[in-house]
Image (cartoon, rainbow, N blue to C red; front, side, top):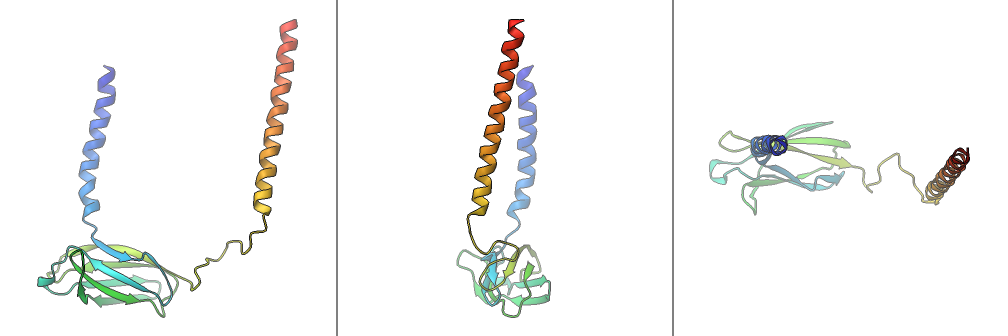
Amino acid sequence: MKATRVLVPAAGSIALGALLLPGVAWADTTVSPATTPVGGTVVLTATTCNPSTGDAIFRVTGPDRDQNVRSTTAAAGGGLSAELFTAGFTLGTYTVAATCGDGTSDGSTTFTVTPIGGAQAGGRTSDDGLGSLATGATLIATALGGGVILARRRRHAEAAARL
């Protein structure tokens, strides 16, 4: 009885994983690198497109874009690729959807355009050690508080045992 309680859910999980795995494999459009500063270059690749059926078209959409980019070369690992220069792009995330020359979809993916210099807004600009100092002080205070509580419980337990 116990073996079936383990084997049935395990078999169901394996079956579900087998059904979902092909969906992951079909997403064959890639962008490298996935993050680039304004003015950088990304390589768009449609890995399953056959160069003999015509060029791949990459549709790039995002905060300030809705443009098509035509493939320019056969990719080293197979498929078709194009370079995209991000000069003039607004900061944010862009979606790339590829269509092969025969009209079939090759999936989609995203890439992010960041500020030049790479530092995102909102972080600390200097490491003055205050964060580490505060963390250490909090850990010490927590340990001391736990020690006090433990000592009080022990005293109460000893007093109750004497009665």
